[in-house]
Image (cartoon, rainbow, N blue to C red):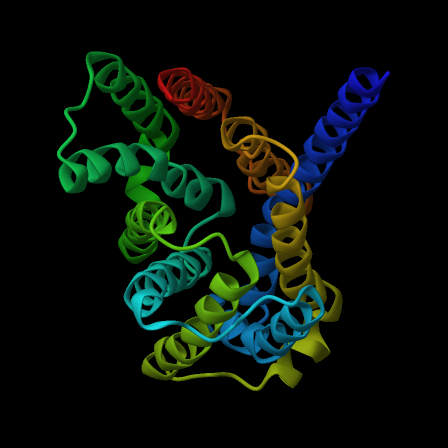
Length: 299
């Protein structure tokens, strides 16, 4: 009887975790087109992140208080947590800044090369050899990137491309550093936002900002609320889902994020990829899914 109850509880947790992960991925995907609309209304990505940190940071502190999670860093936690915070900050700032200069589908395609950079970075830092299968995955994904980006490469902003690739590289570092911090998601998120806010304000200041948020509110209130709110809600849901499903399953489910971002960009912004470019995106997603599944099997 107890075994049956445990089995039912495990099945329920799996279903709930899967649903939450998909919803989180969809919200993350919706965040990027919303940020693009806000950017076109006069609030660049770095400014958006800076103002978002102003309210998200105290919210995380409040959540940590109710969850009774310690925010103070012990001496041995300072270095790993700050490395994670800086890499997470650069990922967010570069990624949302890239949509100031690129259509959403192009920014998404370039950014989602980050799992392949994780392979290269982990092999370099941890001294592991890249397997032939991983080399094959990398080759397929790179071919997909060439197909997806190639037809419109001449018309793309080099600054936007550099920012999107910078976000991908920063994200690879973030994933490597994330495995070296304690299992304290609210504390890690709190310190990430603590670094991200000032860094985003500095990035915005270098570009002549930050802009007054009231200007964007007057022009695009709903997209601004969505750009800020979807990220915060997606992050909280991701934390809850991570407690209910395995990391490899979550990795597969979060491939729904780029699909959502590209689909919404087509519907809302009329930024549409050609059939050939969509085939390239499909190749990248297949390669990433294969890497996640093979990585889970190796573990």
